[in-house]
Amino acid sequence: MTEEAPALRLHPDRLLPADPGVRTIARRLYDAVRDLPIISPHGHVDAAVLLADEPFRDPASLLVAPDHYVTRLLHASGVPLDALGVGRGPLDEADARAAWRLLCAHWPVFRGTPVRYWLDAELAELFDVDVRPSAATADAIYELIAERLAKDTYRPRALFERFGIEVLATTDDPADDLAAHAALAADPTWQGRVVPTFRPDRYLEPAGSGWAGLVERLGAVAGVGTGTYVGWVAAMERRREYFRAHGATSADHSHADVRTDPLDPADAERIYAAALVGTADAAACTALRRHMLLEMARMSTEDGLVMTLHPGVARGHHPPTGAVFGPDTGHDIPLRVEFTQALQPLLERFGTHPALHLVLFTLDETVFSREIAPLAGFYPAVYAGAPWWFLDAPDAIRRFRAAVTETAGFSRTSGFIDDTRAFCSIPARHDMSRRLDCGFLAGLVAEHRMDEDEALDTAVALVTDQPRRVFKLPTARVGV
Image (cartoon, rainbow, N blue to C red; front, side):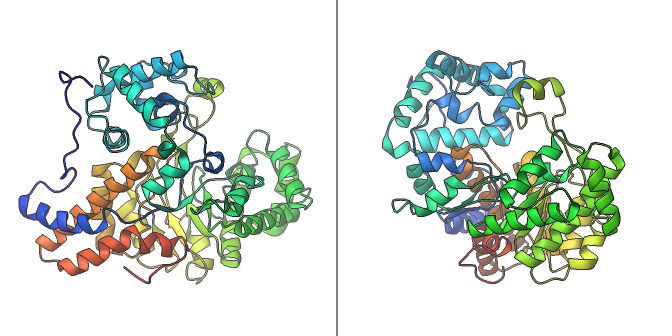
């Protein structure tokens, strides 16, 4: 790489406290957790990538096109999504290079964002890039990464091992046959652990496009008729059991709200029948979805799947983009959300049930201290989910710890969630969280609110024990 270009260097103290005394404590804590295994109980990497173990095609297909964190800010800066490879399938060499040049030419737009932190770490630590991306350095960086990707040590399975991933959870449709998971589990050459996650959102939204066809398909794979509400519920129960048999430990839900108002069985059956033929109005469809979310909690008390809630997102905020490029392409926008009243019916019934783990995530920071922390600080079933999506950023993570800890402590939180489709960003995301948590704990030690041995134990537990315990993964040690 050229010596004239600005260097890309990662400072060893990045994200640690600026105060020298607190930073010294944080360094000691971070040294203890830096190389611990990665536990990723919620994410979107495709298990088929690890099953096939084929070389990644090119730098743009790996680091740009699939990562909506990257593409959305470039789009806001005037770069068309199709020029970045979004929704286009495999890129040829010319288009991949062109997409990479666009990323590098617009590098300044990422200043101050977590995306910049993740990309810097990926480029420097994974691919040995030592110059800052720019229009002038784009081709040289592309060629260096392409050279690395051609090596066996950069295939998906080798990277999985290099990253130190102990367990990786995927996100899967309830009707998926989970063939990739089964094949991985049966492969004697594969030593990693990849588990599915039951994600039934589309099947719980009767007002959604194609819903009747979806529940018919669900019934077909479950071997249960879904012409009735009772059959719909039974099909969900059977598919959850199928997922559990393939290693799933959690069910994930994301709707506009988390209301869990119950319906009488006769009303549920009536609305369901109307929804199947398309005559249920929007209010009735919403009522059925809210009732069914309560039912999903009931199922979790019976089958033990952890229930995670990711509410408050306006999906597909720009319909023209959705029509061309599909979902998950960077135009989902946060909404205000309410938990306390919305979850009261669920928590009245199941909030003290020993089998229920209910992890609450939000994109609305105002509810961290007002609602989520108090709920997690009383109900044994409830845990405060770590900041995710728009909030998995340094200052937001610090605000989360400050808002939640005084009410709920550390033991009522989930551990870090990377929630990513960008496979190579996983270690950078977890490293960011570890540095920030060590900085927060170091501040408590410096203020004499916690002894350093307690801070050390907590730092280790947040990385390993806490996600294992909350998401019911093996080898958990009790407590934080």
